[in-house]
Picture 1 (cartoon, helix red, strand yellow):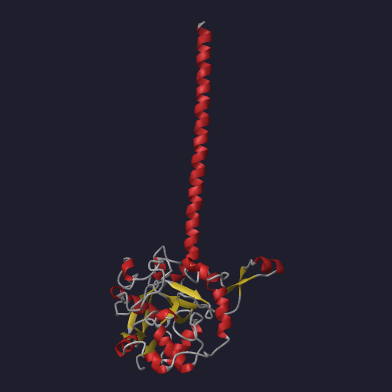
Picture 2 (cartoon, helix red, strand yellow):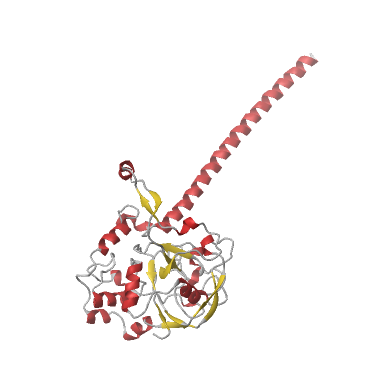
Length: 351
């Protein structure tokens, strides 16, 4: 009787253990599925943020922009063939848009004294093409206190009949954004404006010194990110007037050197001496659909092509915060334009 009783207990114990084991396995599988789903969701969120930064307009307004990716570039390229504007402001109407005092303020330039400064960075989290930190010495020069605004660019259009950006209707400023930084301008547009104004585009070294001074600070105001001192990472969801961020000025008193719009410079995107960045990074690439099937399916791959990238600086209203660091380099083909590309001008002291 004892052996039979003991045997029954052993069988019950084995059955109990099998049930616990089955429940444990099911729990582990369920947990793995849940964590897997959460991981996929997290990756999806990261990917959406990446896509946001690459979009040429706010994704919330996508219903108003039913266009394929990259079509803004195509439209701009086609529009660039027009060369001259047909309709725009009368001069008296244009100058009456702002008070005389405001026009004078927008035209101000800031003197950056001659001497050395530390360019680039050695920070581990920075992109390789931002490295290494190195000393650069520059002569004295002047740089615009503010990015070039819609209002200033309108003067250029009225005077020269230069083609207006694609977001201007009948050659007039969209939405009365007179004090906002002008956007949808290519490097060629920026160069032509500065030449018309008796100035030039700054080199990226001039831009960086004006932004960070001589103490190698990470942002114009210091080494700590402060979202209240700049317009970036969809914090505002659009560009802002160029006079807004008074607490975020550079050591020389230059506005919007971090965020708002990413600014064209005159410099080619070439490697710094002793950089660890791959040479491939600096080679121009374009999207090409190489077969009829690829073209039909709208599938394209990156291939190397002729040309040169131009450096953009400062990040923008849709960049991630680290893209607004004073040392960070961005780059585009010079014929590209977007709603977060802008610029400012520089000049030699003799001018």
